[in-house]
Amino acid sequence: MYAPLLPVEFASGLLTAGVAYGYQGHNLTVVALIAVIGLVFQYLLKTTLNSISRKEELEGRTRELASLQVGLLGTVLQTLSLRDKMTARHSAAVARYSREIARELGLSERDQDVVHTAALLHDIGKFIFPDSILFADTKLSEEDFAIVRMHPEQGARLVGRIEGYGPVAEIILAHHERIDGRGYPNRLVGEQIPLAARIISVADTYDVMTSRDSYRAPVSSNEAIEELRRVSNAQLDAAVVETFISLLEHRSVTFRHADDADFERELNLERRVRDYAAPRPVAA
Image 1 (cartoon, helix red, strand yellow):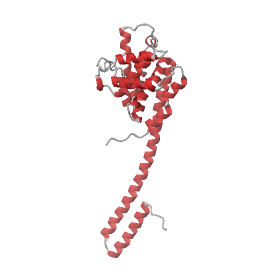
Image 2 (image 1 turned 180 degrees about the horizontal axis):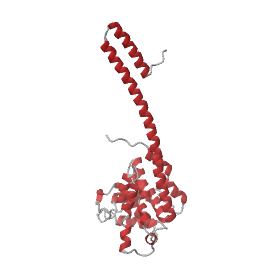
Image 3 (image 1 turned 90 degrees about the horizontal axis):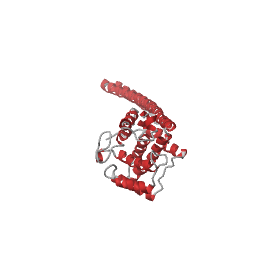
Image 4 (image 1 turned 120 degrees about the horizontal axis):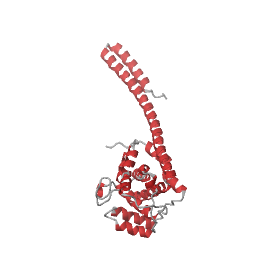
């Protein structure tokens, strides 16, 4: 058997045959045409090899960039945990609850990851808070509360500067909006609020009420469920509330705030590096 010809070899053989034919038939036009074909084959081969090389280099740099970006966010969360363990653990709990709700609602794996990431980072804007607000044990003044209301915008601005995190930033910006339009910062109403933000709002409200390291005295899960239903269709999305309640009542969906392993598991940085380095599908 003969080994298959490579494109350049094939073009060269074609060119040689064409030259012979041209001399035999005195048809210089055919010789010129086949010569052009040979050159085109060589050019396409060179371009293809260069493209493959550039693609591999780009993919390598994309993985490095994703690793750097996600590692940076992980460092920020770990730093926040050192400064304010309560807020960091609360964010991890909200992330766990939010992913479960998203899965139950039938969101894709990619969308579940976006919801989870946004939940992990939803309070990252609290870095702007002075200690007098962050660790306050008394009612905040109007001036202090004005600063508190800035944290969705500050968090979205921070996260939005990272390549590929625009959708996450949009969710963070909207996580304190209310179904009745009385939330902040943009007073969005109903389905104007991204579904992921509505999911996080439900998980956020529940964890604030039930965690032992909350700003207020914790309540039981049953009491928290009653409160979630009371504020449905005003503060919270009723369908999301009922989905979460069903999860709480029929599955063991919990987060142990005092457990370092639970916190680290929700960060899961290695998976995020793989996810954000993966090529995004091109819209049709």
